[in-house]
Image (tube, rainbow, N blue to C red; front, side, top):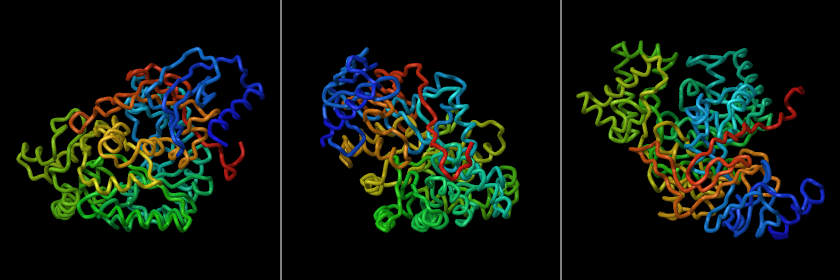
Length: 533
């Protein structure tokens, strides 16, 4: 059966059930666009009709009358894009409704974003959903429980293993969050205090998400050569998935730093072998050669931050300890390619937009001392205005290109304040990797940014243009869709989105946000392993 016949059959079924009548008006019909429906199917010229928060029809010519008609001739019509990994708290938690429209994402055509990533997601999923729903937000949010949030609640910042009671409390928090609707369990094992956990602890806690249908989403322990190395870290991720009994998803997959650049083929081979053996393994990726991190995470040895900022500063004040710290910082600086490769991106400081090397010269300091000056300022400050964020230029084209071509890799921004990926990831991928360098084609870009991502996270009736699905729809001008943000000007909104509908509400029109806060917190139904309410 062809797609057109199937769509017509779905519409006819809807009409026969009384849910719609032939004379019924759609709210809007998007007419004559080139439709990429989120699947691997070939695009076609046709119409998309929306009624309320649902798609009423997708096909060559809409038979429905509409209150509004949108001329999409020459435009790409796709599902709203889905960001598989992001850090949007500056926007979605703002008290200002104009900020909560989440323009950095919606102006890229993004309608849905995964939150609670890198282990930072609260286990209080029900409370989170209630607060975000009450406040209103411009994009759909898909929450995960974070290992870091759970571990810190039980163990604080301490570098130690949990006892039996503490482990039970951590497991209970994960079970609670899954039963309240989280899609999975995220970790950031590179970051303290998560980095203090042994693999066995992670498996034990992750299993609570596994038995409730969740996936394991991870910023793996080492994307470089800091501890167990990139290959060792990939092996750890695969082991966690096998022993916890759950799908695994590599967040922002990469080969980071001079020691591991060029290892993408070997990492891909390891993942392909696991997939061939029956393991469910996927990944997401952002299309930038610079990662986003902090001076602290990039340069300090993990043991130096055991116990939190106060303990860290005490170690800085101890001369023999500082000799050890500086020796390890020197090695980490080399891994990152040196101070000229570290761009300081926190907004509102004297060093914003300058490299660590440049600031060290301006201050007449060794680069390590310049880094310690900024790190210490953060540790001594009660202000949440973080000073030490960096863009770290540590990847190569060959690795990024090869990862992007894999059918199990989808798009993410890892969008964080100060890095252009927050404002421009999807247009950057389109402009550089589809249009300019032809690393992937347009169909792959859409698939990697919509339906494939929805499949990985099991998003209900999202990610595809199909009758009965939620009306998250993007109309994109292929000749003008482009990033405006770069490393020097990271907060410039992207252009080329003619319309974006989120749950049927017009959220962007002609490169401008409306006031709509139509996003929803997308919670999964409570699995059978949860207590009945």
